[in-house]
Length: 72
Image (cartoon, rainbow, N blue to C red; front, side):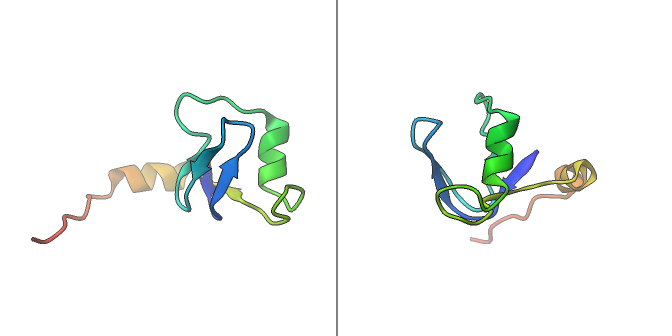
């Protein structure tokens, strides 16, 4: 699983816009290992990593955390 660390528009996914903090790839979209390598390195059009791998344990920890409620 990967997390977006810099906003980008995925030219290989119908110009889908990914915001910082989004999960990559989005639900329902399959990507290739080479695309993940490209986006997680400086070898893409922006010249900087756009996604980073999330440790599986971190993902499980986040799911277990109680959600913060917005005060009214």
